[in-house]
Amino acid sequence: MSNSLLTVDEALDQILGRITPLGLARSSLLEAAGSVLAEAVASPIDWPRFDASAMDGYAVLHHDLTPLLTNQPVTLQVVGFVPAGQHVETPLRAGQAYKIMTGAPLPPGADTVVMREDTDEGEGQVRVRVAPKDGRGANIRRQGENLRQGTLLYPTGVLVDPGLIGLLASFGRSQVAIHRAPRVAILSTGDELAEIDARDLAPSQIINSSSYMLAAQVSRAGGVPIVLPLVPDVRESITAALKDAIACADLVLTIGGVSMGDLDLVRAAIEELSDQVGFWQVAIKPGKPLAFGSVGGIPLIGLPGNPVSSFVTFEIFVRPALQKLLGSHQLRLPRVMARSTKALEAPRNRTLYVRGKVFADAEGLVFDADLSQSSANLLSVVDIDGLGVVGPGQQLNAGDWVHVDLLRSPRVR
Ligand code: AMP
Ligand code: MG
View 1 (tube, rainbow, N blue to C red):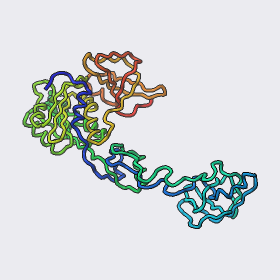
View 2 (cartoon, protein in one colour):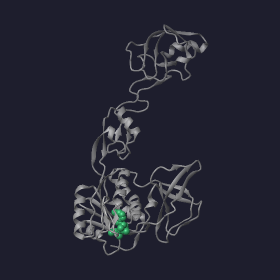
View 3 (cartoon, rainbow, N blue to C red):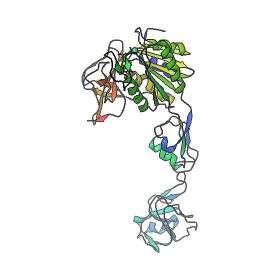
View 4 (spheres, protein in one colour):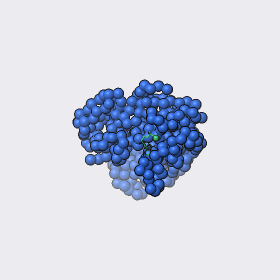
């Protein structure tokens, strides 16, 4: 155990270094949106599957259009009609044309499609006015032109988004392999805490809010939260509760009891159970105390009790861990530059994470720090879009650029 301050990156690297993605699950395509792909996707087909017309018009033999070069008229006999969804087997012969619609398979023998607009749109006979400027092969989508069968399209780790679901559906796939969503047990500790439905609070009691806040943060990050009952500041109770949590979860979050105070029993309990432990003072404000352990491969992360610190340390340390469990390659929050509306100043030796709103306009992004930055004020985490990141000792004036870690999409002013 060391008392020196770790940087945010050092602490995060240590956590991520001990986390491996969860196993695979089969998901129905309808339920897979938002998961992370756990199989590489290759094209099972040539795409398009067949030579098809790219235009409404007439399928012809290019050779038959030769007279147009010397301004002689060309009239062809229309021998059939191929709408999309049908195909013909009788080959096209010299002097003939098939009327054809966009997406319909090219009749055998045909090598060119003349657009409807370049003809008189005749039924029994069609007069062609101009030869297609692309010459032989014009207006045809060739089989495999977009995609060859077997081509690797997407590796594992890609987000399953609506487009990918559409692509998989086009391959006739109703199931897809994804990484299982992590179950995250949330354990708040402290004698002063009361359950949310408690009546007649003693003057010294406060309602457990952080378990609910963190449950929502877990859901937002793609995990499945499990809120466990409150645990008093009793070492044996904490150890027992941790064991229960480990049994039902892929990741355990504790809240409170990890700082240097007398009742900081959680770190001791994590230490007792863990085969790997790290207790850190991280150079971060709000935050600072953080614990990490691992029991039989289940990671335990101990967050500081102060609700604003819990919120921020979750986004900085737990969210990337969840992303890694989920199999994603995008672990960190996206970091952008924005102009700060306010002056911001970090302490000499700690990185400051400022809670605020992010506005997008044609000029770029603007970061508007919340007025209240007290780490005890829960209002500072309500309705925010990002965390402004101000490095140790850094002083920014209003109008300066600031790094912002985005929690969600910026808003429009
Ligand atoms: P601790 O880290 O246990 O010393 O807690 C620091 C502060 O956060 C104390 O004022 C606690 O009452 C408060 N706190 C701890 N856990 C929670 C929680 N689950 N909900 C609301 N406040 C909490
Ligand atoms: Mg406590």
